Length: 316
Image (cartoon, rainbow, N blue to C red):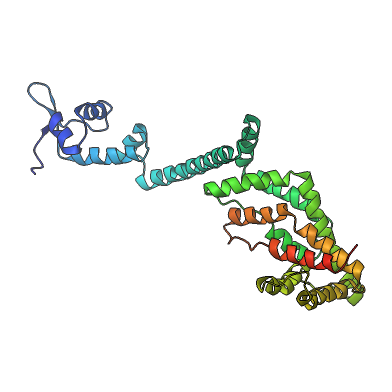
């Protein structure tokens, strides 16, 4: 290809894959200027115009406006700087689109009213600071006055959702549902009671031993004892379950410094029933989605087994 050859607008359009109308449009706006004119006054372009138009088309497909493209072509702006700015803008747009998609998907699945849809949309659009404040208010309501213990500080951290900068649709939907749970007073009260029960157990052990030693939650201890029995298919009301129940009631009695009697078994059954709130399990499932954690193991089967075993051995 001869670098001194000049091409009419039709040939330039053919070489670039653009229409004559598009090439003329760019030429009129000074994006690609003709090198010369034919005796008849028609515009003629050098081979450099082909490369220039190829770059223009690429930048337009990436969403850049013509004034910005002209500055890049004229070396008034650095292409890497412009690319970085547009990449950042696209990141924001993608996040907004994901938020909208998450809300619309939730609306479609839940059959929400217009008022509920607007409410969910507002929740999804909360800034990072606003989300942190909403989460903090919930955790303060649940753990306020109980968080002096290092164990409670760890629990609070483990219950904190952190929506990523570029969340998936599933993470947006999970965040919206979590935010609704934050504002559910009934759920707040239920979780507060669980926290108070755990705090009372820790205080009882400290008073008995005189040492503040971090201890596993009673639910985890019961799970470790009852889980194998459940997996083995042992009936919670059968004699085979007796030694298993005896082990975790003895552990609970030692924790509280109380006798292992019918009253203690009823107390433990009530404690496990409160933990077995389906809203608690749903919270942990949503939290895992938002934070990108593995799905938590369901405690419902082992808690159901344990409560049934305790109730069977502590008739009212």
